[in-house]
Image (cartoon, rainbow, N blue to C red; front, side, top):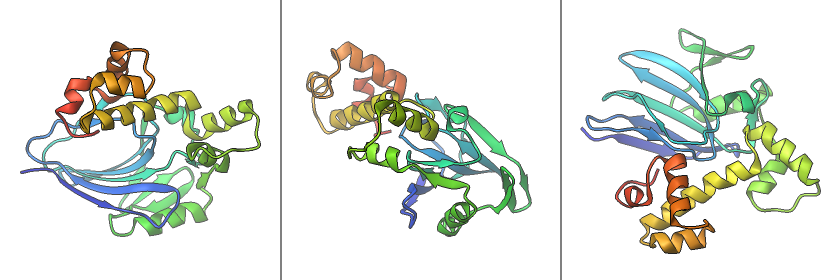
Length: 223
């Protein structure tokens, strides 16, 4: 059985994507940094686990098995939870307490969302002031000018994402490099266009962040 992946957009400007992934019989799952943090509803053998995962900086092997179902709400980098410091979640995940069809997020008890009602769930987070966003970080992500000092921008970016603007940029650069490689550009061309010092530098960076070398990326599905 192949993987089954369903995708839907969200009404919320805080959310990048909503996916429902059923693991197939042949799967070597790797999670790559994508500039998002997630709330994940993981179903395995009839048991449901609620995970809160922060921004990631390198590829991580996922412990999924055939038949597992993973509902992921991927939040944009400019959004954050008021009850969890982003820096504490960097490269980390936290299992949230669950009772029946509800789970605990900070002091709030929330109904476990489904693929169909995620927008209502997101609205509930916003209504309770759990989910917020930083307009300065949003402007930075869209390459828009802001009337703030560099130090202030860096401080707000760290508070919201858990990492520095430069670290975030390195991840986006690696993903763009992988995309260009898979579209047929040569390693030399991509290293030059993405301003890596040389091919070896690009190869080391892609291996660290995306878990694959340029040649492996060319032969695989984009992370």
